[in-house]
Image 1 (tube, rainbow, N blue to C red):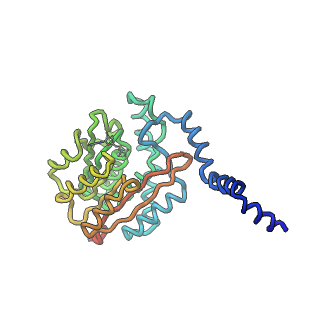
Image 2: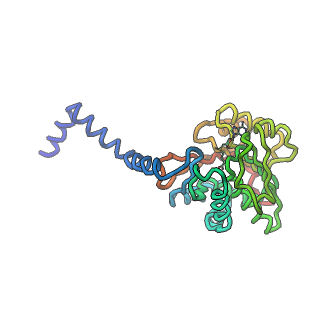
Image 3: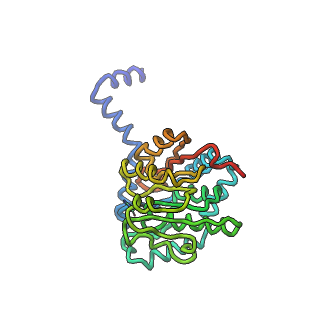
Length: 280
Ligand SMILES: C[S@@+](CC[C@H](N)C(=O)[O-])C[C@H]1O[C@@H](n2cnc3c(N)ncnc32)[C@H](O)[C@@H]1O
């Protein structure tokens, strides 16, 4: 009887339409609450900071373990090393407080996907890391923290960040600056005159598809033979995936799931070769 009534109601296009719309909105209602909260609590206008959901951190560690061949526990250990690094956290919060941008910043690290960048620095032990587009330097400082940990284990490495904004990189100070430098100006111009082989390249500057692809073409001749490329734009374009196919490389994508934030999340495109993580 109940089923028969339901079937009858479902045949009415208006009632059925309203029922389906209501069901679909249940997937988004929480987002509106988060947008409202963010609108009045956060001070950020761009390059949002947030934590990742706990399960999403596990996905990240599992994906990096599958790509690199490192045990899951080792990868998770590196991620936790970054999460528990009180020195880097204090450094970031203090630098934000002292900067002229406090009015537009939230007092948290919110490294999110950059935890994956960090784990890859710890696994790869790269000699040269390049990140295009450093903004305030959140990725820069974490990557340099990883390089300093590598150095303490006997593996030297240096970081170069690019940015077109002459005020970028205010977090990259103190001991993190010992292994990190900023190349100011247009990324592609800086990369054209870059005279070192790159082991880990991170694209995060101009997010247009053409510019992103041109960055990959520009660094191609100066990548070390098994270099790893990370794309911060792979949730928006397929340019790194295209570059991987054109150059007989592998490609995987990790999708962020921000915790308590409306932003749908970015991700990490990982472009690598079969030998990128081979132990010598
Ligand atoms: C999304 S932010 C980078 C975020 C940073 N990687 C992090 O971990 O927080 C993008 C940055 O790229 C810079 N940028 C945009 N176009 C650029 C270009 N053509 N050359 C160099 N930097 C550029 C912007 O000034 C901005 O600071």
